[in-house]
Amino acid sequence: MILKAIVFAGVTLNKLKSTLPEMKKHFQIVIVGGGNAGISLAAQLFRKDPKLEIAILDPSDKHYYQPAWTLVAGGVFDQADTVRSEAEVMPERASWIQEAAERFEPEKNTVITTTGNSYTYDYLVVCPGIQLNWHKIKGLEGNLGKNGITSNYRFELAPYTYECLQNTKSGKAIFTSPNTPVKCGGAPQKIMYLASDFWRKQGRLGEIGVHFYSGGTTIFGVDKYRKTLEKVVARYGIETHFRHNLVEIKADTKEAIFDVYEDGKVVRQVAEKFDMIHITPPQSAPDFIKNSPLAVPDSPYGWVDVDKFTLRHNRYPNIYGLGDAAGTPNAKTGAAVRKQVPVVVEQIMSQIRTSQPARAAYTGYGSCPLVTGYGKLVLAEFGYDNKVMETFPIDQSKERWSMYQLKRHVLPWLYWNKILKGTA
Image (cartoon, rainbow, N blue to C red; front, side, top):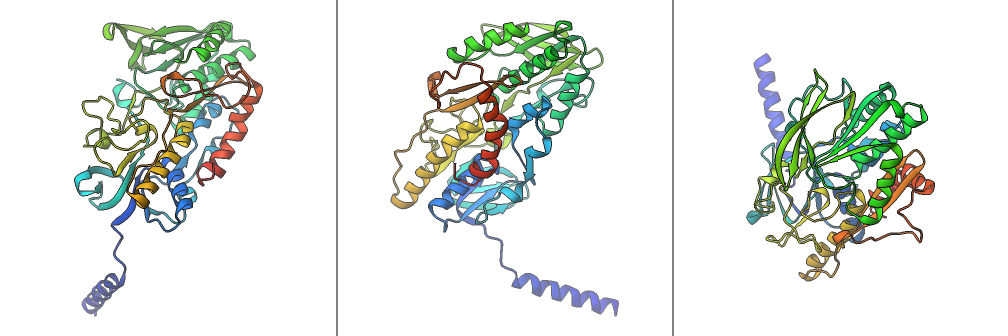
């Protein structure tokens, strides 16, 4: 009887499988990445044509609003309000393939996932975000999130940063920025300014030495905003150390090891003691892009090789790069994505309808809401070649309470309710 039951069950299962529809493997548009760029792109494409067949390839089950993590670390934003389920933000008409891309075969219009599945496309948009290379900092593994070692670049660590602010009574606080491009280039500084203001309000700032160690050469690349930030640095008594790139953490002795650069070459290493340290990790395109034919040739970062105006791939005309992984010389911010998405939408729709490229072009616009203290923010807006591109009829290089409220209240609402739905 048992044997007959097993045979019957097997026959029944095989019959059931034969009646199930085969998983769709070809789409008009495949989007690799279900973050800000991928979700808002799909939503805007569907608004142009609801009949499009779009697949979004992303293994995540959570979706994050990362710009608010600085405010979480400052104790003024609820961490729970920065996360939702990926299913909740996924456009209804999109086919969500909850798998991770592993490699590309652009000559065959094919994406292959880590599970071994292959998906083909008419058009491909690559926007998986940026890769955080924690492993490039020796000694960091196993020590991040304790002993005063923190980073707002991870969701679960932003509350620990606030703990560090509360627990640091005296000594040396270090804030780092690497010598690579990073998402939200102002983030390494924003938390430093909030921390300094927090300690000022607590009457501790005089007992705590605040230091900024950066692999870059200046506090900010756009002169108009740099001048304001230099005044902020002076107000808090922050000591800046440029051309210093963090390469190692010695947790047992609470030391940070930096490579020091001159003329682009490492000339020495220095060891600095710390009581707390906020780390911004080195960053690049994800490895599966870096090691693919889609990457910029001979680039150490592996960005998607695109035209900086059309965001169209320089070698594969039916492929686009978007967001942080795109090889465009602009600030890697959510505001940049918001301006890039309509360009890609117009380019793809024009190709579909006329087989010709559209006139739509990306100007390099990016925005960096630089929190300089509680209730203070400088709204930096600029494009290619650091051209200032401000929205409001005021001097945005000044610290303003109104701009702080924009970041704290308006932008999060705009993100969840408008941007991801393709209406902003």
